[in-house]
Image 1: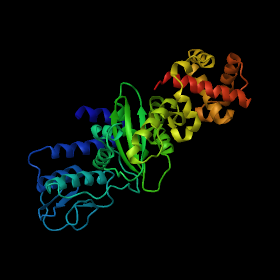
Image 2: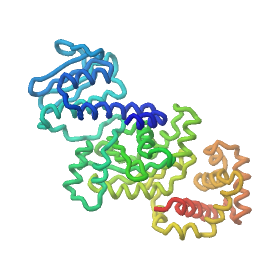
Image 3: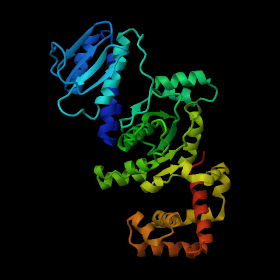
Image 4: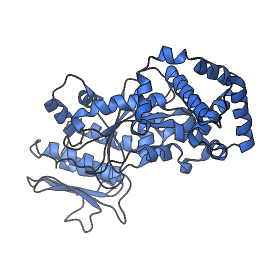
Length: 390
């Protein structure tokens, strides 16, 4: 866990804090001396404010951040979670709640329910209406949700244990980055910056950062735009944002019934094949936005890579500054505008025009012609899918 925190801190401080909170409570739950006093005292030290617990059976405790017991009832509660019909856990932070108070209270409530013998059932999970920090999920539970042969009953039970509602739809997101970095860490950092108005659970499945996103009831908007903004987050500085865009690829699946999450997971991995690390716009591919283009992923990668146009693009890419030439072609095909393509790539329009002229001379295309531009876009897709086989 210490090594995980060190690596995650290098990616995103907020995500590292979230993992530290979770690690604190997992260690507390694994100890042999957990009681109301230990829970309140340790939580107060973690949150750096007074904390209290009142169990339904009458046991309770209240401590300050310095470890001193506090008598009486709290004067002002900044946040709390109810424990069944009676009992609660709470924090007493002066002023506004802290950014991780909701996560701390959630885990504090889990520990308090264990102290009550497990007889208290948590409220039915619902998606919140405000952005929250993503939770690191148990990979075994996520694999059960996505497994092909599990029963709906077992899937529903795993979803509830993940804090997700089986009756509400969700969508899956697949994240890939630098092979030297754990994809789960990349996913936690990315989703922590995205601030989605949804319940978010993150883990690692094989080579992917695996994300379950359950929006509030009735909400169906794709998180693709928020994920692009998170990749390009200017608050982290332009150099860090450019590094994230160069490293990360994200595929967003469609919104499906929670018990059919594996369908969205397949869509997310398909969309990931269309994502191109380089710019925030291309780094995130949304399966819903791809539409019929997603069917290209059904063609074997070796057939796509054998297309003459795709091989010619490979030749161009291998030339000096060839990656910029391919990026200029992709931006122009997507926008249909020389100036918009230049603005997206942060290049002068004359530089983009020169690169496009080089492409036209090499492949015999006239990119102002919609038919030729369509062929160029298909060649780009074929090259990308051949390089990212299923």
